[in-house]
Amino acid sequence: MRALILILVLVTTNLAAAEVYRWVDDSGVTHFSDRPREGAERITINPAQTYSAPEARVSRSERDEPKEEKEETTAYTSVAISSPQAGQAMTNTGGLVQVAIQTQPPINVNHKARVYLDGRVAEELAGGRSSTQLKEVSRGEHNLRVDIQDSTGRTLGQSDTVKFSVIQPSVLNRNNPNAPVRPTPLPPRPTPLPAR
Image 1 (cartoon, one colour):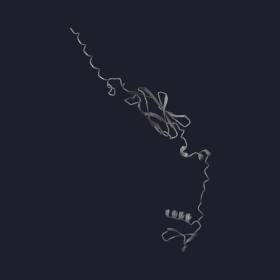
Image 2: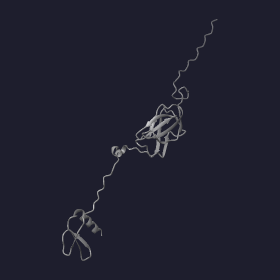
Image 3: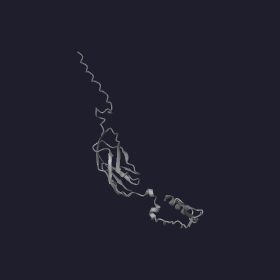
Image 4: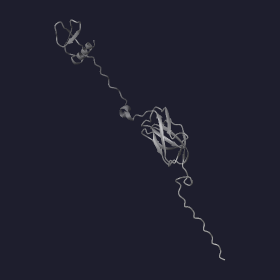
């Protein structure tokens, strides 16, 4: 049966207008050929049925904008700050704090992550970036939060606020190994005794 289907496909695609002959041999097997043979029956093959799909209609905005620049408008199911961690105390950072963000789904290249430090925008990450290094973070306790926004400024996701601390030893602290060396004061000079 498979041979019959294969032959019919070949015949219909390549020889749609050609003559085809069919016969059954002594074993009962049906054969097809493009050459006449004794006892063969000539069969007529209709032309292959074809279908031409109409041209797809594309709206003007879809046609004019490249597909990769289209912006996803779905909200983020999760936005979290993975670094620094809640309650973390960092020592001797030199004012630098590494911030890493985890989102689900990953940040779209057309969206931006806005990093807030103590209620003020400290950094805006564009192009799908999810990490940065904040500079000049003073010692003390700080609040960190991240919003993911689309190009219009609409918030699509927001992290919880993370509290962390920066501990910078004072240069005036005697136990600080980086404290400046103070000169050792000279002992007072003895006062001479009055002459007799």
